[in-house]
Length: 294
Image (cartoon, rainbow, N blue to C red):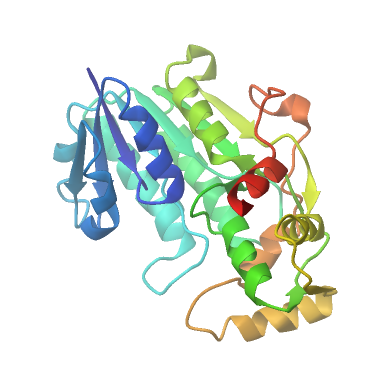
């Protein structure tokens, strides 16, 4: 039985990944700073919740790890959680500790197009996180995955807009021409598990994307059609998009920020021939929406 340590596991990708790994003969260590967020994982076999309040004992807690998976990521900055602190700073500390206890295998989750020049602090911080991995772990077996938007149960993208379409009779759509190539969480988790044991992926950065490119407007129209809603969709131009987002930033709950807009200015797509292990059987967004609408 091998030991797999996972950071950033309380999100929907981590939950699905751990669920699949738990079916196999693995000892899974779920590293978290918030035990409550990881409580739902306790019921799974061979899963151990590892609480760490700071990095002082991280090295000791990582001992005995065979594979390290870093899923840590935030979409919105808070006072205590800045993009660089999380995506670069925390990654750097984890990798340093992993190196000291002689962990040799690391799978790091980044973001598609993070290496494209732009003004997005989110994408820039993801790139800095990658550089921390490739520089500090250069003599070890690392793999970096750059996914497009990942969707599935409890995601913060597709499901958010499903809720909005269901309850808002008039829908103001920001950045309607932004492009995405969403991949289903089941497919993405399958890729993570395959990559773990693939020597061909060592010291490689792999682009991950779904089977079809959508504009933001096309995604919203597809949701509207699937759920048989009669909403009025009003696409906003760039000026009104910025104004609308500034208004949304006042809300206590972060829905979208100006930095999100800067990320959306860069097409979140890849030539399917350049995507890792593309297969025709990748799940379609339309099929997922149809299933959850029934």
